[in-house]
Image (tube, rainbow, N blue to C red; front, side, top):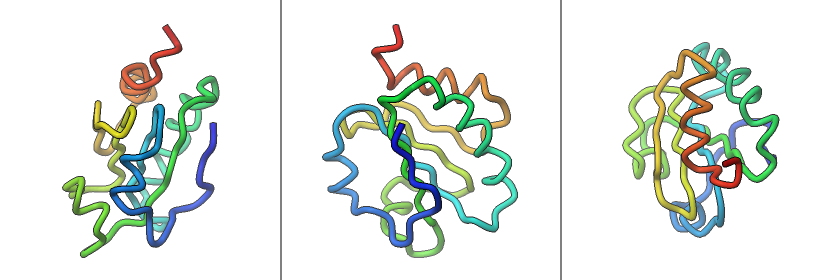
Length: 111
């Protein structure tokens, strides 16, 4: 799993995101957000056995173009993409199981 260790500011452009092959998770949030901090261990636990899935953390906020492209309203918002297409979305996930189900939808080689 290739992950961004901290939130990227600015994040990639929408065109760059859509061009990334394979499974990808975009995490929109902020380093000071307690909801984001609470969700990160849940995501990390699920990504541990999924080396193909790439995670990109994007610093979000008012007027940030990538977050607005995905209509992000609350943090964290996880966008699950496969071959540049959105397959699933989770906003403030509460359990590792819901993250696992969303990852199953993009990490098709786990089946």
